Length: 439
Ligand SMILES: Cc1cc2nc3c(=O)[nH]c(=O)nc-3n(C[C@H](O)[C@H](O)[C@H](O)COP(=O)(O)O)c2cc1C
Image (cartoon, rainbow, N blue to C red; front, side, top):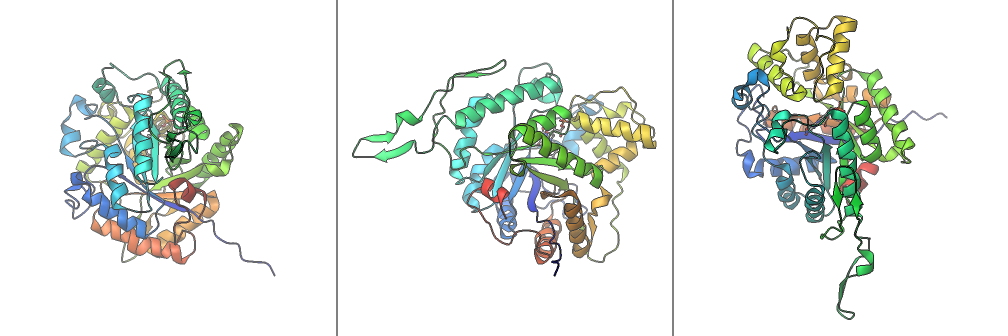
């Protein structure tokens, strides 16, 4: 007898930032308003852990934005990019407040010295018993560059070239302590076996380091590496290095499928097993009680916030363009080039205006059905993952993560996904990397 085809199992991640968690929510906007103490995220982490999320992820940036209308006002008033505290400081605190959930923080290859970051992440991986990940970003904000003594950032391609070297170097540093290097043997008076710790003598075009690290080899050897580049160069960087890729769903199922198979093919061409690279689709999830559709249009002041937000994202002041016409061709963004190309393509092929395009990008793809009662959203996510092939869903909570939102995810959506047998009901591994590789 033919067996019914099982659904594709998938992983769960939770997207947030070390900043105000709910300032754009419809109600209860002051929820978690002592976020800077870290306690809000500790509580959140414990709840997500009960739902067996693979990880919570903290996006980050290091600037107060002045791109929109050449002023900091919109950023500060609407709390768009600012305030954000340093997620790398938060991870060790959360490591002590949670037990199993993975903890992924963002840090920029354009600003950190590689040795310092490799050491900080190794330390955090040890503190968390192997639950730490690093979202490797190259940053795209000129305002951030100016905070580090640069007038501007290098071009996107050069940023990725530097990042490639950075990560190669960091990997060499993490591997500079072999497994078994820690001995702690009183009889031979040996704490560390010197034959198992090596200089790396890395000399690249952009970075140099003698090594080795002065931290012990961490439980995962190196942190889980995550990345979200979508351009050709960004995909190649991800395929070469990343354990997890964060991607948007904005262009729908066919594009999601194409991106996944492209990334897997690229991983293979780098000599990797494509199954070691997991793609997490970043998606909002609006669980409604009654079953009616959710109003996802934006008020005028919310839309100002969105335009200011994308201006910073693109490092291009969108207030200079007509919102009710397509994004002009030939305009280049300093950051998120693939999203700018998307806006221009939509404009050229479908007459989508800048206002419509930004709204579509801010809302995520309708195709994967992100609004409705838990049963409906769960069924849509399952159908999308069946179609796309995997590998994970990362729930976007940024600025809407009030109590109602969190409980709609952990008390309604996840139990339904568990009932359908598509997400885990226990942690299978001891480390984040092990969890990503098995259910
Ligand atoms: C889900 C997701 C999360 C991201 N998180 C960050 C972040 O925390 N910090 C950052 O500077 N960029 C972040 N980015 C931007 C990416 O690192 C990358 O610059 C962007 O996707 C554009 O890639 P591209 O230049 O290859 O087109 C994120 C992107 C996505 C889709």
